[in-house]
Image (tube, rainbow, N blue to C red):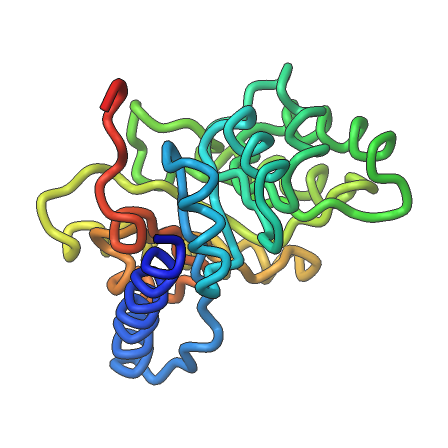
Length: 237
């Protein structure tokens, strides 16, 4: 059964990478510039291990506790926290995952910086700054003006490495409707990097329903769940 699961993931990965390649080709980009993060939330450890065995080695989780359990129960993956991070979970997140994509305030970044100096001394922990460029009241993260105001302080934190920006777009009816969000994040990155060249170039944007548009607009990381794992298991199912 595990061999069948691995084979299914190999095929799903090839399809998604093919779609990334086609989207990149439409705008003259090299598809190797785009990292695929497989978002495994709610799927059990044995399924996630099959995905890793199929080559999906960059994994994303929304919740710190679920990420920690899957890190402990699998081998060979590199883990990204892509969901909201509460300040009281900062230490557990730094202990469990390899990248935190959802740093949405200066206060959280400062807390992570202090703790990273304790739990990961001698290295700068990679993070992305989550920005609510769509001005969606349902989403967390910096406002664009807020990240511009805080960027110098963020980049000066000694124990964090700010690799770039991340956003979660509004729920929209078509992928094309998500394009303005992706354009806005790219423009913000370019503006910030012009004044702060030590900010990394990463743009994490785009999910199953719109990642091709995100690639066309410059995404360097896409976070894909359903197109790889299928529908999420329902509670009690």
